[in-house]
Structures are given as C-alpha cells and as structure tokens.
Image (cartoon, rainbow, N blue to C red):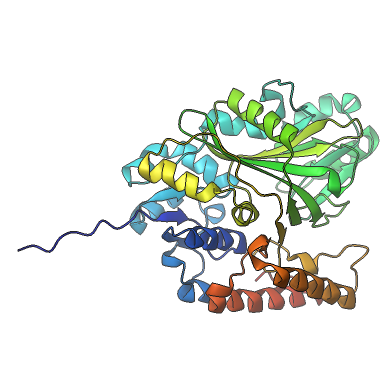
Length: 406
C-alpha cells in the first residue's frame, strides 16, 4: 500500500539571497511561516545556517550575464514556486521571459514590459490629480543636447550608485555631457530627476500590492529619516525609515498605479515640496528594499502576495499598518551601507557612529517587535552573526580606503 502523499507548501523564490536586503525579505517571509528557496552568488555562510532558507542554488547574478544565459541557468536550477522579482533588472527579465517562468511552474504578479517602461520614462506616466509628475526618467543624450537651455534646473543626474550629481545650470550640464560623451563606454541615455526643494524628512514612499485584476489589496506608507549620501547631497538609499500613515500619498499612489493597470508590487517614492504637494521622484516596479519595516509594522505584504500567487486568493483592499515601527539598517552586504557607517556631517567620526549604534540598540531592546534592523533576527542568530561579521569587515575596508566590496 502506497504511503499517503504529503502536499508540501509552495516555496517563495527569492534571488540573490547573499544580499542583505534580499535576505531580510527571506527572514520576514520565514517568520510568516512561508518556505523560502532561491538563488545566490556566492553560497555564503549565513545561507547554510539560516533556519529560514530551505534551499539555495548557486546562480550567477543577472547583472553579470546576458538575460538569455540567466534564463537557461534558472531553468536548469530546478527551482519552482512563487517567484518574487526584487530588483529592477529581474522585473524586466520577468516581463520578457514570462512564458518560460510559467512553464517552470513559477507563479507571480509583476508588471509587463510596457508598464515597466513607463516607470523608466516619466513622460509616459498618466496624469492624475493626487500626485505631481516632474521632469525625469531615462532620457536620450541627443535630446538633452537639443534642449539643454530649456531643462528645469537644478537637475539630479543618477549616474550610478553613490555617484549622483546635482547640475545647477545649462553650462555645467553641457560640460558634464561633453565629458560623458568622451568616455570609452558612454551611455545613449541618462537617468535624470528634477530637484524638489526640501530635506530628507520631506521624502516618503508608498509600497503597494495589486492583484491580477489591477486592484490594490495591500498598502503601506513610511517617511525617511536618514539616507546614504552621494557625491552631491543626501539622495541615496534609505538607511532609516519610520512607519507613518500618509493618506494623501497612499491615495495618489493607488490612483497612479491603477491608471497603469498595475500587477504585483511597486514602491512610489515621493517628496513633499514647499507648496505642500507630493511629487513623484521614482517608481520602483518591485517590492521595496525596506519592506521588512512594513512586515514588522503589521502590513502583511508578503503573506498577501504569497496567497495571491500560490492559492489564487481573493483579497480585499486593506491597509493594516500600525504606524508605530521603525527601520534602521544595521547589517548590509554587497552594495548597501549600514546606517551607522553612513558618513554624514553630524556623524563623521567613529565615536559618533558608535554612539549611534548604541542608541539604536537601546531603542531596539525596548520593544524588538516594533523595530526592524534589516537582516537581523534573534531567532536566526547564527546567520545574523555571520552577516554582522561580513558587514564589519566591509565597513572597515571602506574606512581604510580599500576598494574591495565584500
């Protein structure tokens, strides 16, 4: 007599699990009782000991290979489950290789190629009353030369991570473009963004989840407290965020993405100008890097996504956040900086950075259930300690002027 078959729950598939932001999502999913599998490069110690990772397959990151090679490697990995594209290039890949992923048994919600393109070219975004569009997006360099005197200065040039620039006038921009065109591997387009006056506290985001019919089912809003500085000002990634319900931001983001007939996750990054209006700075067509804050605050984003994909659940719109939680990124690997290592004017010495660590840990100990340190979990202690050791090594190397990225 055959033994009864056990139906194993479908795993959540997360790529690049060696990265601290991806790993923090895996931990959040694991705490919600969702099995996690995924890809990694390389196979790091924390993946071997984490209680939340059921399986990790070594796979070269998409940024280092062609999309066709990545598709072949992914197909040969044997992975199958609820696919969660967590980066822009994976979203674009998912849109292009949707039939292959579905054939592999992957279930997912993600924008199509046309929707993805709209997030890269701001002029394609629909006009709505709730949020204001600004000049920006991926723009052809030839077009910039033609209209250089008519652009809305100042402009932020998002050349590459850590290297954002502020351009104040047409003459400075012409110099930048000439230098850019003189490089050996110049790009055909540049990512630009019109500058909106205001400090970091004016920056906030709405994280939204839409079902297969384009209906929003979960939402969360949070306000930035600190961001990583770039070569010209604080324009970088969020290192500290607080949960805060901002209804006008949520409503505007829902209206914008609904008009785009969105599916899956999106993060609408906005800034409130001196006029009190919200301006769209960026649309990330994926789950946010600090969704772990939304999970700690009770938003239930990952569970909802899993239920939509794995069980074809029918969910109603609900914003479940408590708005009493904080996120401070204490651990990071690869390209991200921990909050305590961010060199800002008020924290530019080791002593002051240590004081910031001590303060954060004291706040965390008061109520760990309402505080996210990113990829840190006391129930997953061995993995967290491996990550912490790697973070300290990386920050120390950067402090000593080394170029290595751990």
